[in-house]
Length: 633
Image 1 (spheres, helix red, strand yellow):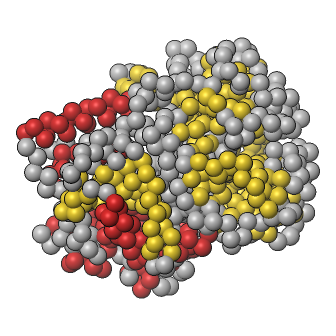
Image 2: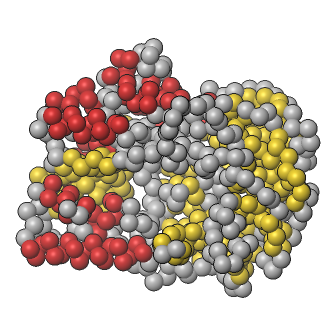
Image 3: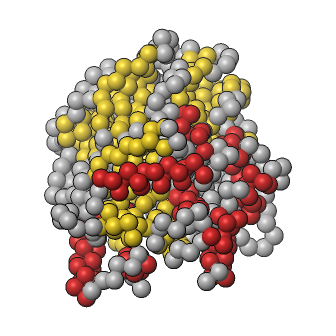
């Protein structure tokens, strides 16, 4: 049974032949709509603000297989003219995967990641007009994140030499075979000359570097890094300094939070970073911290901020940081004074802006691309009902310079902000309407719970058949996307509010939000379903063991037993900040939040989906839940 019709059946829609045909038509319209969206992945602005590079996901065919690749384009940053392909793809491989564009400080060169004829990533350098391009590495393993030294004569990048796959738990594991080994492929900070040559791997052999930034004098780096397995230890990463010449390591700070985006101040005296409770590498949110480069205690300069900082840049300043923040359904562009702990909003809106993205669903480590003066900027802007375009202008005063999605129409109805109170605290979410709402008619509703839990339902335009919530809305459902406690968007206290309480308070938030939706929208209370992936899959499994309110469920990559999950996933260190101890030290705190503990309460028909090479959520969790539901009829 086709996925969407299967869920309609589970909800008991009782479709007539005409109703089934209408759903098939809606499904075809949705698939046609998302296939027409051209997703944008990054934008890099030249130091003088005159030109920019953007990344565009394109569909190509190779060996009779359809695949999506990211291509880079160079345009005028004021009117979008002069479009030129920036590529080092060897014929006939074009187009190949290319991304990670970075300008030199003098604006004469652009470095980026390309792919050679064997599918191996390499670092390429192009002239500012993209006419002269040459590959400068001969890497044997994944490379990423090239950045020029301040003098423009060297390029740093991250290199996992010899690794068989891209580092990080978000990527599929190689299959286990034979005796399990402890082989670890570290992602090393690496430097190479502008013209190529032998790259130098810096720092200890066992140090996995996650993020880095050049010091303004080009003599040092600040890195977020951890010793041991790179996949498993991001949650324990520290701030270190690495000498650019000798590779010597100097520990700087060991915050008691997860860290992201270390950045030097313009005078080299301080380093800023984002710190907070984060459940996934690269999906960032927290407060803004500053630490002296000479050493000392990090200081939180946004205490009590009712938002989650996502990206930061000093942009050459010694005292002012430009940040993007997620604030209860809206994005804020803010100027923060590091000395006075003062924040000034430059722009706010119910839209997403980013300079690059993580898998197209959350900002990466660049929220806004700025010229050297800071007077001109570039972003990718979108909302749930407005497709992405590259926009430029003074910060907060942007106009579109691309029209790649001008013909794309909204795939759903309106996306409305919903706010309610739960346990005396404000909570926020998004309600997505079907394309048309007939007065007097009642509609089925799907609750879509996001993953994480430290993440959020962001206002991002649906651009893939995997955007299941938009598929349901396009087919005539209302979709409710809550941001319960544990989510980003309302400050660190809100993000930490589900520590040692998985499933309890966050489900109360979801159910009270559902009450609020039913009071204002024409929802059929007998046809409400729930679905989610990862932590959302867990919350789906948990919900159907706590309430019979949902008539159907889809649990994607869910977790049904935190005790067995602890010993079978590849990233168990993420759980320590949430549960307070390992499962071996305090099994009770894991047991009380496990759906299997309450499996006899489940009566909801459930569709279970999982990937058999998932490092974060092993498929065994889905097998356990499936078998338990099956044994209980």
